[in-house]
Amino acid sequence: MVIREGKWRCRYCSSVNRGAELSCKGCGATRDKDVTFFLEDDAPEVTDEALLVRARAGADWLCQFCQTSTPPGETHCGNCGAERGTSPSRPARELPLSPPSPAPSAPREGRRGCGPIVASLLLLALGFCAVASYFAFRKTEETVTVAGFEWERAIDVEAWRTVRESAWEGEVPGVARVVGQSREVHHTEREQTGTERVRVGSRDKGNGFFEDVYEDRPVYRDRPVYRTRIAYEVERWVHDRRARASGSDQSPHWPEPGLRGREREARRSEQYVALLKGKKSYRKDLPLTEWSALRDGQSLRAVIQGGRRVLELR
Figure 1 (cartoon, rainbow, N blue to C red):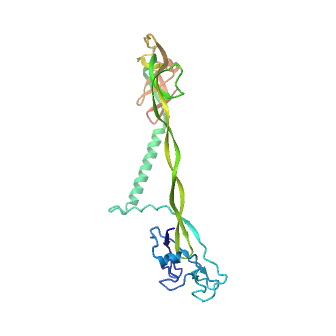
Figure 2: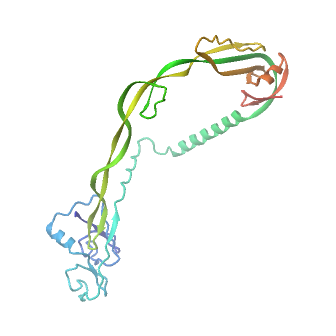
Figure 3: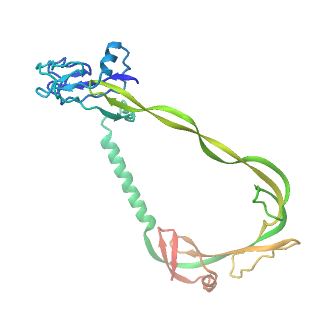
């Protein structure tokens, strides 16, 4: 296992000391039970043999009389001289590997003191959006006059034709004629290919040193699963064209689709628009019955949204 030396901070003078030190280099205070060891992210691996022997010896013990840390090989407290007796060992603990912190953004030259300006611009933009939203959704009423009409009717025409398609084996229509096949990736499946050793944290050994903690994690790959793809021909109704008729009167009619052999009518669609004149020119889509009931030059009350869209005619 990889061993790394930790550090500890003196509770009296706040000096940071090497984990192996038993007394503070700043004020000379002894390392006691209240010390918490910590490991810096860039702490190097310990390679010195003497330090490794000390690290692997086990946790320090805490003198039951003065609470001073003493290496496990010592039988008497290095501070007060008391025998170890029933003095407990410093508890070990495991620390998970912390995720890397994002690097702070460097300040840009020439941008100091721009906070109030940015805040003002943001408030101005919010105010503009609020005003724009008010006018966009505000409803008003005005008198409008029917100034004209538009209409359009359309018929989609489908033809019975031979088309080429493809499907997976077992999904081909029974009436289809197979024209080719190939092996293609249908889907992928995860499969384990092995394991990898991953460092997941460190173990505080209770003596100023830390031991890397690893675990074996599975390694996967996406394995392609192949199936047979069938190309085939089949007859289907497919869209061929659209016949349209339009006008600017109130006499709508359906276009002549001009059906030929192996063709049929499909969907029909229609649109009826009243042209209105008020403070502005407006267009209003209406159902056929309402549209047909209007008369050129007729005056109506209109509910207008945002000054441009007619919501309702009365």
